[in-house]
Image 1 (cartoon, rainbow over the protein chains, first blue to last red):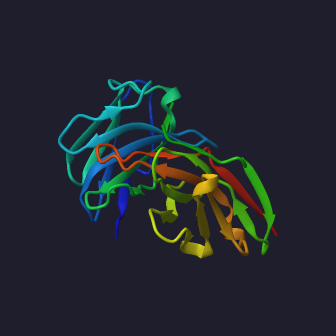
Image 2: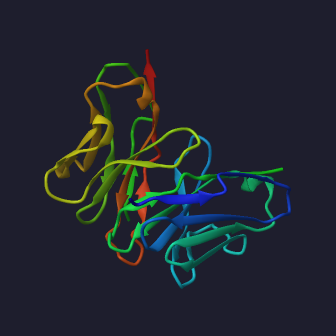
Image 3: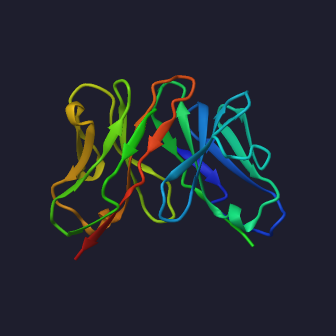
Length: 116
Length: 115
């Protein structure tokens, strides 16, 4: 149980285009999902906290207009990178909290974004 | 504010040797502590967690960790390392705040296993 999927697993796009990444909890309801960004050889950087049915809470320094997060259901959150640029290239990981468990997060496999 | 320190950026051990990865945390109350492993290009896999109770926690793949409140530590151990254990290891401390439940991650320790 407690499986989180991400789609796509990797994506290459041209500079200026937008890319949507999906995060799904497959076998549990996730009231909260988190979006992380990870640069090579570095730790996870929390970008935003997404609660079902409400606006995401962004961490300091993260542009909310660039990284649009939608958490429309208890099993799906999406991250849209708008007008992507090469510096947005990174590994994006989502995690989800089971509504029955207060602290533990379950992580998706990540999405590798490359912007040309 | 909560924080996690993993003092060792990179550790190399021989296959079959024992392993200890260090983790120190800073948190105002009883922490929720986690160890994750990440293989290249993959997401994070939970190795073990500590919420309360027995301070010696057993995890998957033969790993264990001991919570020591007096030292603010949660070190990860394995008695005999396998080549497949080579990966990145992250220690994390969780918040019991039900409005967020965010976790704070350490910078990670890269484990290399020599044949």
